[in-house]
Length: 323
Image 1: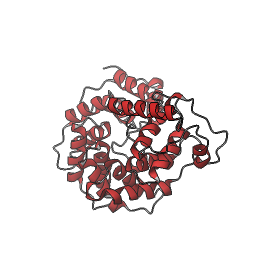
Image 2 (image 1 turned 180 degrees about the horizontal axis):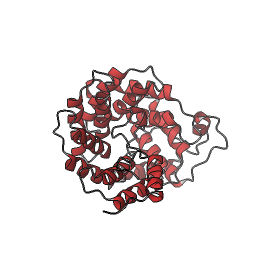
Image 3 (image 1 turned 120 degrees about the vertical axis):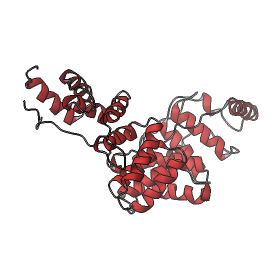
Image 4 (image 1 turned 180 degrees about the vertical axis):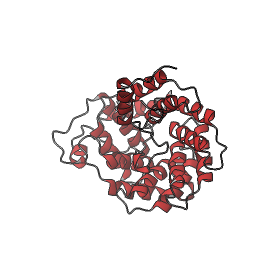
């Protein structure tokens, strides 16, 4: 095997926006005071005989995929008199299986009920669910994009970080909406400023490839640094690439590139694991170590990463003379 390692695959550090998945924060579950309110309402409902206690019933599974309206109509309880925020909390309980048997269809039906009267939390949860499809619900990215837009319209200057991030991702790739990279970049920036670390990675990746704005490596490097400071593995491994090549106004620093890559690999990020193998293979920022290269390629191979599988095969079938 030659020192050039021509048979090996090098993986680029920053990735295409299409690889970003839609994000949905963990649904909010009832606080102790809200649980007390539920118990109070349950007691009143049971005593009056007007509402059955939903959190003590076994949720019904729909026998078919006829739609959420049929699911909602089949529920053995009423939400009459419940505020939309209470319906959202109940939906979250069913979605997470918190205090009840997990049932995504019931959760979706309840989210839609609250969304139809304009509850922002319900609109977001329902939009995030229908974008990719959950349970018997078929994906509907067009309706999801419309709901994300409606949320931002309602919120005005306050914005909504998760709606901004998810709509930006859809705009960047033209999923359910007309492709608009310029607006996508703007929304990624807005979401990042509100604390969505993944948005920094997305915005930086766009700037590094000249999407949505003229290519700006310096700004991209700053955004990757912001994300790396928050221990986002994509930002860390992308910043490592910038250090490795001296890109974005950064001074070339192979040791820093190696340090960032190894730390991101320790988080289980497959691109970083593969790149750690490449760095050990070529002695980039570290001493060349074929055993460590094999170790990282093997880890990434177990995660199904094809370039690492090829590289591992190369290393195990070709040995380099020891020096």
